[in-house]
Image 1 (cartoon, rainbow, N blue to C red):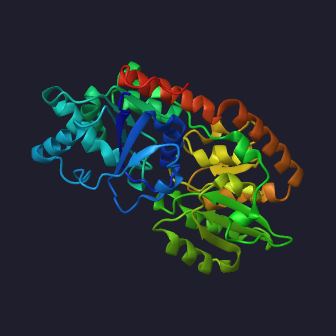
Image 2: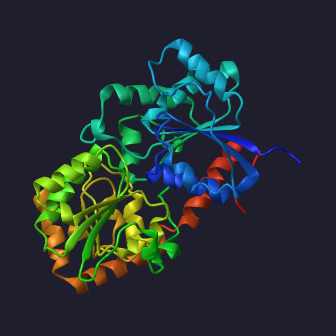
Image 3: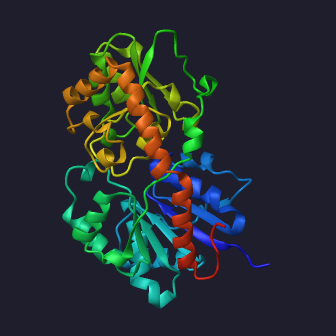
Length: 381
C-alpha cells in the first residue's frame, strides 16, 4: 500500500484564528490519505492543534524545521529550501510564511522541489490601512513559481491582481465555509465558562485578542447600551489587558466578559443576541459566517467582504470603520428591535446555508490540492 502523501503547512501563526480553524477543518475532512506536518513562524502560538482530530488525521509538528522568521539571506533560504525536499506539497499561509515561498521560487529547479500553494487571508495592524510597498514587491517575486494563490475574498483577489501583479490563472478564490447545520443547533450553555443570567442579553464576538481587532473600541461602543446588555469576547491573545483597561475606563467591567478561547464555537455562539466586529481590517471573517448560521444579526465595520457576506436585510447594520459611535448606533438600533433581530437572523441563516456550507469549501480545496499532487492523492470522495 502506498505511503500517504506528505503535506507541509507553514503558518504565520497557528493560534485558533480563522485561517487556522479552516486548516484544521480541512485536515480532519481529508482523513488519513495524507500526512500533515505543521510549523509556525510563532512556535509558541499553536492553539489550533486542539481542533485537529487525531482519530481522523495523521499530523506531526516538526521541531527541527528552519525558523520562518529572520532576514532572507541566501544561506537561510537555502536551509529552508532543503527542508522542503522531504514533502509532496507545500502549503504556506500569509506574510509570516513568505520566506518559505521565496525559498521555493529561488531554488525550486535546483532542488527539484514539490509544488507550493500559498494562502492569503488578510493583514495585521501594520497593513490594515495601507499595504507596504516593500512587501508588495517581495510577494510579486516570491510567488513567481507558486502553483496557486488561494484567497477567500473579492477584496484580496483584486489586491493579488493589482498590487502583487499575479496572473489571473494563478489566483483561486475559495470562500470560507462552515458546518452550517452544527451552528444552527440549540446552544449548550454548559460548554461556556460563563453563566447568562435571567434578563441579560449579550453582544458577542469571536476573535483573537489582537490590536487589529480593535476590541477596546467594541467595549466603548457597548458602554452606552442598556445595563442588561453585556459584552462577551471569546478568544485569547495579547490585547486582553487593553480590553480590561477599556472596560474599567468605561465603568462597565461588570458587563465585559472574557472567558477565553472556545474549542467548539458552534456550541455557544447561539447564546449571543447580536454578533459584533470592530476590526480595523478583515477579508472574509469566518466568525461572521458562523454568526449568520446561528441565526444572529451582525453589527460590524465595512471592512473586507463583510457587507457582501451578510444578507441584504443585515447590510444597513454594517457601519463605517474605526468609529465607536457609528458601531454603537448600529448596536443601539438592533437592541431596540427584537423582531428585526429575528428577521435579520433568519435571512442570515438562509444565506449561510446556501452559499457558505463547509461541503462546498472542502470540495474545492480537495480538487485543487489533488491536482497539485498529480496522482499522489485522489482527493475527498
